[in-house]
Image 1 (tube, rainbow, N blue to C red):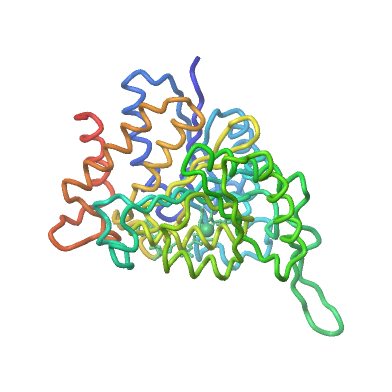
Image 2 (cartoon, helix red, strand yellow; image 1 turned 90 degrees about the vertical axis):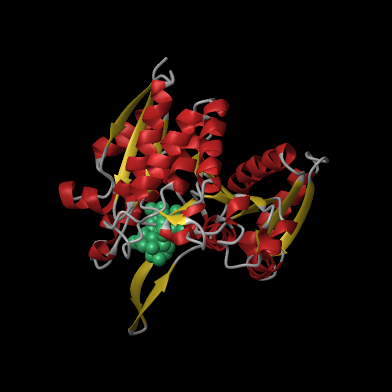
Length: 359
Ligand code: NAD
Ligand code: IPM
Ligand code: MN
C-alpha cells in the first residue's frame, strides 16, 4: 500500500533543510519504500501566498497523509502581524491541535563524534541519551480563557494553564511505555510546589506508576530540572512534562548534543499518525545562506520511518549514515570543530546520501 507523506517546508531555513531530508526520503523510495510525497505551504509562506498560515487545503492534505514532515515556521517578517490568529506559529499549533498530536518525542542523543561540539565538558555529556516526552496539545499553549484586554484602566495579558486528568494520563502512558522500552527510569517534571495544575499532574503520574512497577518514577521541579540538565544530564532516561516546560527543557537539552541543529522530533496522535520536525525554528539569522544544519530534519525522517511507517531498518540506516558522515569529519558551521571540514547544508545532504547508499 502506498503511504502518503506530506512535506511542509515553511519559512526561513525550512525549505533548505526539508530539501535535504526530501532527498533522503527519495533514496528510501529508490530502495523500495512505497511512498508518495507531496508538498504544501504552511506558516508565513502560506500567509503570504494564501492569507492564512494553515490553509484548508494544507490541513486536508495533512489529515489524509500517513505522516507529515515539517521544516520550521515564523520569522521577523510576520512577528508584528496584528491578527494573532494569522501568525505563522498559529499554523503549526493548528496542525498539532487539529491532528491531535499530543505526544511529542524529543530525543537528545549525543553522537560520540560531537562530544567536543557541546558547550559542556565532554565527560558531562558523553554517552548522553535522554528522551523528552512533551505534552503538545494542551497546557498553557491552548488553555482558555486567554487574551489581552483592558482592566481598571490598563491592559492585561493572560493565559490559562490547564490540564485534565485524561490529558495527563494519556501523555503519562506514552512516557511510561517509553521508559519501559528504554532504561526503566521516568522523571516527571512539574511545578507542583506552586501550581495546582501540576499538583494534579503529579497525582496522576503517581497513580499510573502502580501500573508500571518495572518503571522507576521520580519527580522534579522544573527549575531544578533545568539546572540538573546542565549539571549532570546523564542522570535522566525519560523525562515527561507539559507543553511549555517541555519546549524550554528540550532546547536546553539540544545544546548537550552539540547543537539545536541535531535534535529531531516526532509528534504522535492516538492512531499513530505523526508529524516530524526538527526542534529548532526557522533560524532567520542564517536563512538563505546554505549553512543550516539539516541533520535534525534528516533524523526526523528516521523517526518517521520508525514511528509511522514501521520501517525500523531504514531508520537505522539513516542514523548510521549520519554517524558515518560525522566519523568522516564533516560538520556544518553550528557543530564546526578543529580538524573537521565545515560544509554547507547541501554538502551535508550529499554526504548523508552517499553514506546511506554505501552502507
Ligand atoms: P531558532 O531555533 O530558529 O534559532 C535559534 C538559534 O539557533 C539561531 O542562532 C539559529 O541560527 C540557530 N539554529 C537553529 N536551527 C539551526 C540549524 N538547523 N542549523 C544551525 N543553526 C541553527 O529560534 P528563534 O530564533 O528563537 O526563532 C526564530 C523563529 O522560528 C521564530 O519566528 C520562532 O517562532 C520560530 N520557531 C519555529 C519553530 C518551529 O517551526 N517548530 C520552533 C522554534 C522557533
Ligand atoms: C517548538 C516551537 C513551537 C513551540 C513554536 C514555534 C510554536 O518552539 O516546536 O519547539 O513552542 O512548540
Ligand atoms: Mn521550541
